[in-house]
Every structure is written in structure tokens, then in C-alpha cells.
Image (tube, rainbow over all chains, first blue to last red; front, side, top):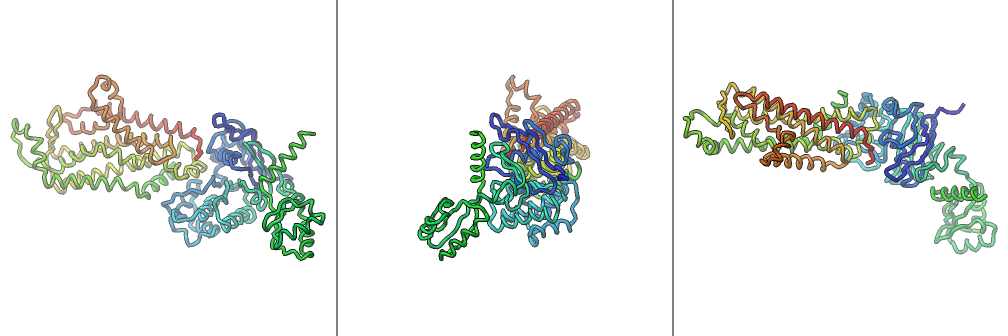
Length: 311
Length: 279
């Protein structure tokens, strides 16, 4: 049995004068998904999210959330959603726990002190709950933002670019928190991002939009094949290694070389064979990792679409 | 809507800025009271010189009632400024800090957000008026004592018995509250149109000053427009000290001020409900 549809956007459009921010967008998020909503900056992600949360009105199209039309059942729907739009903002002159209490009340509940303490602990802000939010770093506000989304125990969490501006540890923390929302709290999460690797790590399904239109959507595992990766190998002696590669069949897979790295276009299964080839020839291998950027994926999709058009 | 209104009140009274008005009023009133205490006799003499040519004035002219009346006269321009400082920020302040996104994504209607902010802004305004009453009248009476109130204006001199003044001050404060509520709704309306905090505050003060200047110019053109300017009716509290009480004039002014409140609030509701929140 297929999972219940939580969000369904039908032919959604938003025009600002002559500018088409979102144009005939269709999207479906199912119950239990961590749904990656991807697109480059200016693709229309934030505008779409704002329409889903009734911050802006669509020019055309329909928004169904929990099977109800957003504009007919706005309050009932919003009661079941927790969100961070663009960046987490709070009343800076109030403490974290007071902010959570206020936002709980605004969501129609009176949160208990225990509930607030639990959430503060969940997001790793224990000991800072009574401090005014103006003393918080961006990363701390982002974590408090996630606590805010949970204060009224919603079924759907919508987070817009949750790792923007965070340091590497902050990014890891927020990703882990989002995974906990799905695994421990059984929430459906819609996460917008412009980083494919971020979505790849935590999302189950995804959609990519560009210029306000859906380019592709589906299961992450199906969309991101492992047969066509860019694998970057960091080696000790690039020139010597390059000569070795030139005399082997790997030369056809070598794409780029710089002072310390060599990039190969290979499948995930070929990574171990390549590493073995290098190590057996006494090449010092410092690191091997594959990278996949949204730009690469866009190019690939565009090339495929061009091929289909030319046939 | 009550829980939302309580939250709005809490937010207003937790901000340091909200107390600037109370402190400013206390300072201004203290300065005026001190000046009148030290040099009040000379100040009053200047005004009643002409009067003494026709009347024999006896007793304590400078008393708590007169001091409170002088303070009310002096603060008529400053009070809107102090009110706008807080109410001009009610919606735009949330937009500037981004919290408007959180408010607008909660299961509350945008109309209720406006009503709650209007309620909280009005309570703040009432608190300022009550504070002014306490420090000008109560402290004035404590320092200067009770006495009959001599009110001079361009048309007449009214001498009001001491026991006849309290209800008049009460009425004057009520009208002052109504007048300042026009400022509350006007600044809140401007606040709905913009995403920065300062603009609506400055614009409100500018409009009050412009309308007040227009109101004092005696050109035929302005004579036609003046009855429709809210600033014309904001000074009608003075009529509470006229004898007999000009009930008709009071009724007209109260109606015009109430009409302005309804119009400004209506525009705010209409615009804010349709506004795309883009910041």
C-alpha cells in the first residue's frame, strides 16, 4: 500500500509582476518522507515553501496538505505543521524557554516546563535555556528553531535551508537532528536545500526545481545512481601517478588533475579496484571520496534531456 | 483572541523601549513642576496681569489643578510621539526581525494578529495616559495642594471650583486616550505597509506635525479641511474645562476621532490580510 500523501501541490504558480518565481509546479510529499526540495539559489524553493505556509498567495494552482485545501482549512492545517522559513527568528529580548512558551501558545497549546526542557535538551541547548536569544550564535538559533518546530508536536516539519551559515559541526548536528525527527519522532520532513550531497545524506525522496519548474522528482536512491560518480583521489606524487594512469585502462576515466588530486568518472563499484591499482604500484593514497554537486547533476539531466530532444 | 492579546501585551512590556515614554513623561512633568514650584508666581502673574485690571483675584492660584492643566497643555504635541515610538513598531518591528513569518505561520488568522496588536497598543496608550494623570494631577496636588482652577483661553476665562475639577480631568484623560488611540491605529496602519521599524514612527510624527501646522493656519482653504483632520479634534480635551460644557462640540470630536480609528484599523486589516510576507 502506498504511503498517504501529506503535501500535494498542483499547477502552482506565483508571479511577481512579469517575473515568474514559480511556474506550474507539481509536487507530492508522502507520509514518513524526509523530502529534499532542491534547487539553486533563486529557483523558487522559498517562494513555494512560503505559499505552502500561507505567507504568500499563489497566482494560480492548488495546495493540499493533509488532504485539505490550504485556503479552506488554513488554521487546521497550520496546527499540524512546524516550520523554519529561511532563518530562525525569535524575540531576541526573551529567553529561549520563554520564546518556546510563546510559540507554543501561538500554536494553540500551553507547553509544560518539562516539554520545554526536553526540547531544549534535545537540541543541545541545556544550560542556556534562560539566556536571552540575543546572546545566541547562528548555530544555536538554528537548533532552537528546530525545537520551536516541535513545540506543538506537529506531524509535518518544513525547514528552509537549515544548514545555511553553519560551521561544519553545526551542519552535522542539524542533519542528525533532522534524521532524529524522522526516525525517533516519526515526523514527515520537507527540507529545502541547494546542496545535493546534503539531501543525498538524509532524504528518502526528492524533487529538483529550477526557474520555478519541477525538473525531476522521485526516490533519492533511484534518482542518484551510483554508476556515474566523480571520484577524487588525493595522492602523494601526482606527476608519477599520472604516468602510471596513462599506461593503463584508467586513462579513459581520468577527468581532471591538479596539484594533489586526480578526478575520475567511475562507478561506486570501481572505487576499490582503482584504489587497489594505485596502492599495488606504491602510490601513496591519502584520501578517496566521491563528490556530486547539484551543478553536475543539473548538467547530466540537461544532457539527457537534450539527447531525448535530438532523437 | 485573548491569549494572543496577552502575548502582545507581554511583548510590549518586556521591551526596554516601551518604558522610554513613561520615563520621558516623568522627567518632563518633574521639570515643569519644579519650574512652577520655584518660579510659578511670576509665570502666572504674566498671564493674569490683564485679568487683575478688572477683577480682584485672591487665594492660591498656583495649585495642583492648574499645574496639571498646564502640563496637559504642554504635552499635547509630545504624547503622540511617545505613543508612536511603540505602536509604529507593532507590525513592522516583527517584519524587521523576521518574527512576522513565525506569527503568520501559526494557526491564528491575520485579522486576529491585527486585533491583538491594536488591543495591546491601546492598553499601552491607556497606561501612558494614566501615568500622566498620576504624575501630573496626583503628585501636583500633593506638592501644590488643591484649589480652584482658572482656565484662560482666547474667548473666555473659566474659574472652576476645586471640587468641580476631578471629573473634568477624568473626561479630559478619556478624550486624550481616544485621541492617542487614533495615533495608535494610524501608526499601526503605516507599520503594516513597511518592513522597517523606524519609517512608520517618523512618518506618524511627521503627519501629526504637518496636520497641526495646517490646523493653525487660518486660510479659507484649510478652514474646509480642518474639521476632517484628526489633529483638529485631538485638542478637544480642553473643552472639558469650559463652562458650560460644549457637549455638541465634544460629541462631534469624539465621533470624528472614533471614525478615524475605525478607518485606520479597517485599512490595516484589509492590507495585512492580503499582504505577501516576503522578508
